[in-house]
Amino acid sequence: MATLQSQLDEIVADDEDLSRFLTSSSQFNSVGIKLGAFLPNPKDRETSVFRHASEPRLQLWQLASEMVAGERTVHGAAIVKAQHVRAAKLTVLASEPPPRHAAIVGWPWIEADPDEQKAQQKELAALIASQATFVPR
Amino acid sequence: MWLGYASVNAYARGGSAVSTEASALREAATAVVDFAERSEVLFGKKATALSSLCVLSKECSEKDWDGAGALPVDLTAVKSAADFVRALPESLPLPEFAVDPDGAVSLDWIQSKTRLFSVSISASNRLAFAWLDGSDRGHGVAKFTGDQIPRRILEGIRGIVGHGHAAVAA
Image 1 (cartoon, each protein chain N blue to C red):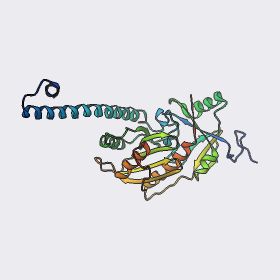
Image 2 (image 1 turned 90 degrees about the vertical axis):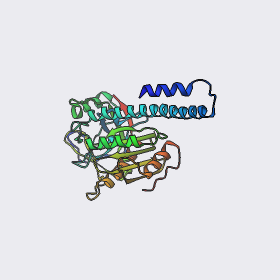
Image 3 (image 1 turned 45 degrees about the vertical axis):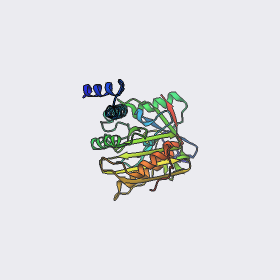
Image 4 (image 1 turned 60 degrees about the vertical axis):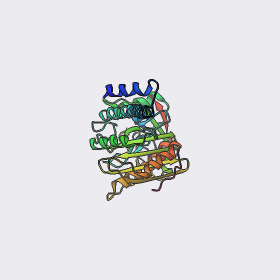
């Protein structure tokens, strides 16, 4: 099987953990992750994630610092298994560089009705968020 | 205004009525005071919510606020979200706010991981909403004119926060 720059397999396995770094305290609460944290970027139509579990924690936050932080505060990470993303009928693809980067793609896109598109995306994002775990920094 | 409220309040809480007219006047004054106090409590909660919306808007006012290419929060959406909060019936709990990557404002009522209702407010006058209720889930779109919350959305919120059935016609 082909390997990537990160030495990870090109295929993201179902049981792999995906991390979505959270830069706003409004993306989570005491219950868990809010669905907005998983909505796609409107420009590239994908949700950017990193192939990393909650442990080792030091490496997780190092990845966050290198890939996301900049001037931003990273409040934590939402961790979800690839299989839960696929259960929502979305696709997880390795997308390097940068190392360990992956993308959640296949979101509903309806040019003629962006509000219906958004509603469909929210439902799928809610499904993913319901399976995600919050790891505070 | 507060001097007037204080005077009415003192009258409503005060002394002994000696006539039918005085009694009726005192009842009316009591009703005014009760309404004013309820309004103050309501305004206080909504004012706090609107203040937190304002803080969040500032936090997400620059593009790429999420480190993944998000658009800055849309100020028209913020205004509509404030209108939505003002129009919420006092019997409903206030939502939590978040900003979506497309710059819309999300209003969330979250009871648990699998029991929630979420409305996204963008610059358009149509609201995108979705809900999870155990194994039931769905989504929809409804028009918002700025002063009256669509019935489907009110029913959906009530269903999730425990005041009715969660099923919403999408």
